[in-house]
Amino acid sequence: MHTPAMAMAFSLFLLCFITCTLCGIVLFFKRKQINAKLKHPYLQHRPFNQYPLAIQASIMLDYFFRLMFPDTRFWLIGNANDLLPHVDPKKTPLALKWPIVGFWGSCWLGLIAMIVLWIMLFLGA
Image 1 (spheres, rainbow, N blue to C red):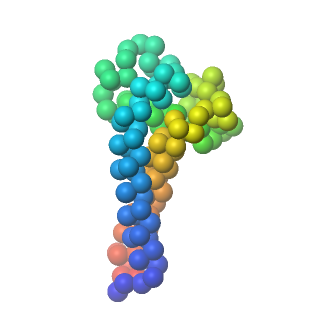
Image 2: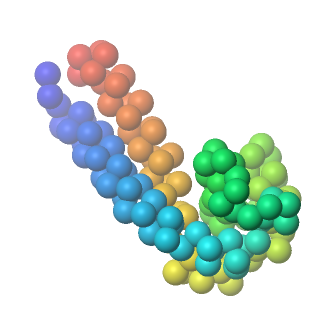
């Protein structure tokens, strides 16, 4: 029942979970510095802490899309690039960049690993 591919998918999923947790903790403590440097347009209306958690997460997701895909112009990535043209990914300090990229990168990769793992369990591989 257990194959090397299933062990690899589970290990990747577990690694993504641990990475997401650690980066999320760091992101929680650095959110003021990140918002002060990257200046999302939503923060002109009210402070970051007054937004619901879903909007706070979407602001961080916009930062992730801008930092990782600066030249893309479609879908949510393009919207993030339109909202944050003042953010230069090359000039953003690594100390502010890695918690965002680690958190959202591990979320997306972990989601893919979880889907693969569930498909393998369903198919009995």
